[in-house]
Image 1: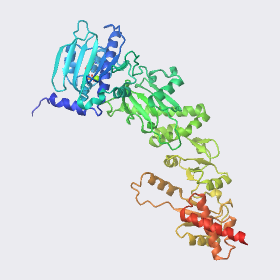
Image 2: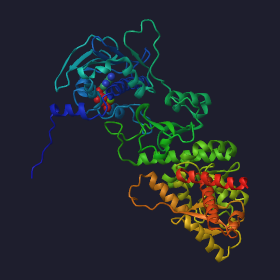
Image 3: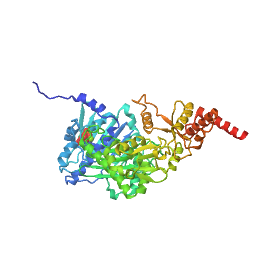
Image 4: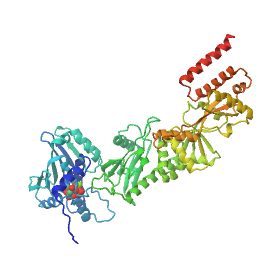
Length: 600
Ligand code: ADP
Ligand code: MG
């Protein structure tokens, strides 16, 4: 048996770190500013421990010199001695941040503000630069300033530097193929993306500003870190507009603020939908100690919450080296279920506090709530009592009220225009109807039927309920009517029934189940349901209707046919399916009838 130590050749490793460790080349700026930020936080910590003093305002400066082709990132933080440069910079994957935390932040529950972790961030500088220089002066008394330079190979040079103030300057000589990083707007965008909420002020200059007052890139005290009781409604709204560039007002929001058993801060906004059929696209920004990590990270935010807009800051996230990837970890699950609970609590709280106000929100928030219910059983259990249905006539009815009533069939409308005939019919029988016109409703009612056994949802044009059926039709009448209509519509299923209402002569009805299946298969582009049968329509003939009764009195075959074909056309007309040839035919026959009436 042989044992040994695996050796790693830095010559081979460096290109890997430079090229493949990080997916986006703009990451270098985030890493360098994070290091600058850490250097300041460390200095602050030492001041608070009485180890040193400070008499300047902490700041980070990002400077672009387009002519010289350089960007520099400087800070007035802790600085490095020559020994420290040797240790932290020259040894790849050796993190001074980790060491600092172990040494100075001993108390267990102390919240660390230090970002660094892996000891690799610095080298991302070579993603944009061909040569990198460091000039640094440590806070330590008697320390000498150090200059370090490397072209990204495995070699470097250290020499004395003329830097006279505490802190570090990292100078990047931008490589040929990264010239875009010399554009002020490009750099401003990157800084805004990642560093908008860092606690140390960050200034961007490119030498063109002259006497102009320069404002920091960042908001050093983001709203989510404040106590909810100290934030005003205007502040919440202003923050929303600024971060999401959405100039509509948000409906309401949830301020997450947890210290124990884990650390989680953030604000989730419920956006207002612009119009009914807008696809909702949310944006949940994830931060780690105020540094932006990425949008819509699915591990932390439950999928349905992606319809919301918000910021979440989790300082203890188990991030891996390239930060936007999370390690599988129980912590992440806890965060996610905490958020679910908070959102559900907010909704039930709003409902309890003011039902009318809640109902006003419902049109905007219902796709989100429904989607959440379908995705997460726990969420459904928490919010089921505050699920609302919009009544056709007026007001709303809650799922709770619905289940407590003795209604077993819930009639719903998806299109008031196209279904007007059916609506009238049910209305005349005093049957309550609700509006369900969202894409998601099809799936949602299937979920409800599954959860609440006993309740069935039926679209108003689906098979007619017992409650609108009148007396039985004699068998021979049924046969006769079926026969005459069958002649004109050999392919269609014909059914004869006497309805309570005489008004309607005939109507098309379809099976609820078949229609739902067909709609779903359409939605999924027929995957796996290639040969799914088209839902079968039935033409229901109302034998209580005077026109239909006439069929028994007319003797002329042609007249019976004319009457039947008009009845069919009217049924089509009222469910918006009278088109093409049918329409032409209907108009011709109607003219013929009018002529017959008035010519005599
Ligand atoms: P990490 O930040 O994860 O520790 P980095 O590769 O980004 O790893 O940096 C390595 C180390 O170099 C840091 O931990 C820190 O000790 C030192 N360092 C980097 N930048 C600075 C800076 N601006 N000021 C002081 N020390 C720095
Ligand atoms: Mg770092």
